[in-house]
Length: 244
Image (cartoon, rainbow, N blue to C red; front, side):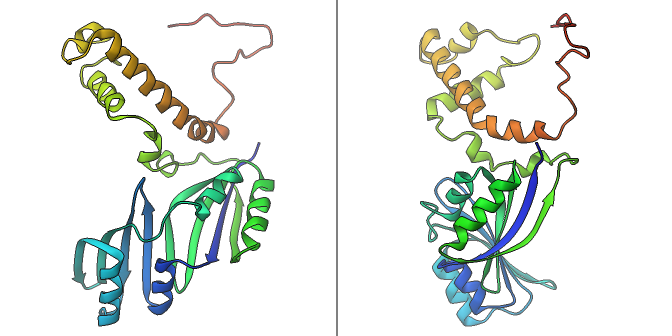
């Protein structure tokens, strides 16, 4: 199975794209979070009053500076809803979205990773049905190891975990439960909480199950281009005793 990285640019109705069209020297990088977007906005030119007004309408300004390289702003915004978004279309075609999205000169630029070239073709055909789209590049990356930092926004790994499950997981980590050998037992860790051992263990197991389920698709991506499975025997029919 070969992996493929595809870069494409798209035009459709979105406030960020429209702002980049009005200000051709502007670059907007968008990192989607679970309930908002963080935007990094840069311009080599001195910002005009219209640009400042446009940025004010985007959301809360977290950082603003001007230096020799130009004008820089970081904002938190909720204008562009991720419900039924193009990112959902990527997932429908088994393509992994790689943030950030880049908006420049009226185009949205995306990068995706696919497990099969046919998935890329199907995605492009789907998108062309209702928006302008251009494929900028498509590269086979079978012989490369994908950097782990590219795989997923952190919030996706913890999607679906409740506050109690997150707290149980954090407490286990802080008390060395996952060290070898373990620094603390479940009974000892539960004794530091206000709940029974059985309740704490239930929260922890559910957290572990959800975390591993969320990480599964990214684990598949990490191992897809790695060397042959080191746990498999070198010769058929020959088993190796576990060292654990």
